[in-house]
Image (cartoon, rainbow, N blue to C red; front, side):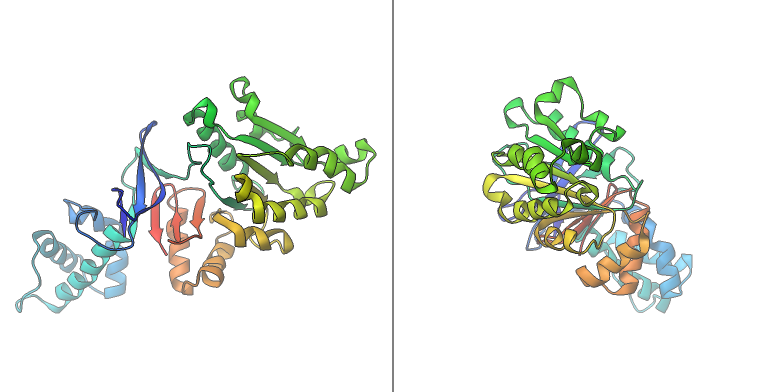
Amino acid sequence: MLSLQEGKHSVKICDLVTGKHKLSGVYFHPDECSEHMNHVDDVGSLLSGHTNAAKSRLRVNQESIDDSIKLLQGGHEPDEECTAPVAKAFWHFRELKHELLTRSMDLRDQSNQRFEINIPKKLDVFWGHVAVLGPTGSGKGWWICNLIKRHWQRATMLNRRKVYYISAEATIDKTLEILKIRRFEDWFVPIDISYEAGEASGKTPEDFWQSQVGSVISNARNAIVVLDDSQDGYAPREALRSQDRLCRIGRHRNISVISIFHSIRSGLYTRQLCQSSSHIVLFSKAQAGRVRDFFTDVIGLKRREAAELVKLMNKCGRASVIRVLAPVCVICEKYLKLL
């Protein structure tokens, strides 16, 4: 069950941000209880975004929809005088209301609220690994840079994590400009692994990677390592080995890996990454079909359910974060749902 209240055995899913600065947690409770259950005063407002779909699926008119919602609002059940369409709509909306209050949260009618994934403020808390998968221009770099910037802004100086940004475009990517701020320069280490940088060094790919990357991150602790399209760099094999090794042992050094790839399925480059990641970031507007297939093949949703979820995700923000640890859920800027 989802709730805005923390409980004894609850698990934090993400943050609920109101305005610019006010943060509160969204929690998962393994058992349903009235004490922590979300409540709503206006049932009609809660169900307003689902009435058109219900009319098509149930084949009932708007009058029957309105009558059934009035019954729900008043806490009554259909009696013998209720028509069959009203009763059908009532039981459908009763079940939907329970699901919306316990298994999902919809903020599309709240302009000043949004869901956010954030890095823990305490330095000694292991955050996990993240796979960011999407085509060029989908918003991968923007999502990562804003995640890092929020962490640096909200954490105290002693709790800021150093970020090693390893990229073939470390010197030319304009998105990184939002991280190249003098205030945060001690926590940002860009590393250029481009083919041009490798050739200029005169070293073999193995030696280049060891001198440019291996020697830098070998002693890293309590840090974030971002691998941005490492397969397009000068030493792709060495990048893959380092990525997979950090995914397996990074938690012992409190190092979180954020890896970026252009395809949801990039063979060896995403095999270990997706198995070890706690979150997978997808961009359904740019690749709706592949995201739908991800939900059916990996998460196990039915094809129709996956297609409807992707359509909803497209209305609720650019990036969608799939939490693949229990409880499994999808987190958009304006929508959250347990899977």
